[in-house]
Length: 203
Image (cartoon, rainbow, N blue to C red; front, side):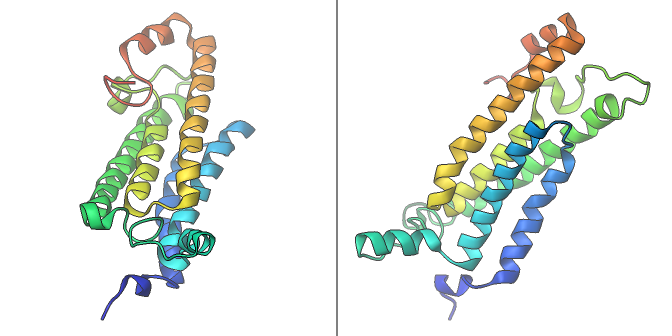
């Protein structure tokens, strides 16, 4: 009979999820050293998720040792709040991950052909695809993917890292916007007035 504990020590599962979620990093080039910090934090989050979901539930062991009592299923081990919401967290993770990857891919396609590739010799402000609505779709995608993981299998490292990831991507987005204003001036300022940073029509 399958138990939750039987999901642990499955190291092929750890490797699979690290590779699966790590693929998204390939859609973001790194021009500057500071660009690597959010990507490093993202991969650390993915590794923490994969290890604690299929490897060793370290958060559960640590907290259980600290308080001298085994944590109930769904609290820093197992499916998040499984006793309250069942497997809704898993379904939300799947939905957020697929949506996040689609947003990242759409953003990459548009920005690569119209800015990074610079086929005509000069980049331009990208306003097509997902860029009609938000200015940083790749970062939105990464935050959606990591939020999905958190909703499915929240652990102590993930709870501590997720706000830091959001802060890093927001910081990087602001820096990139400053660079775009310097490069494109009024055109980019006008584009900023019509779009949101991460979530269409919200923020």
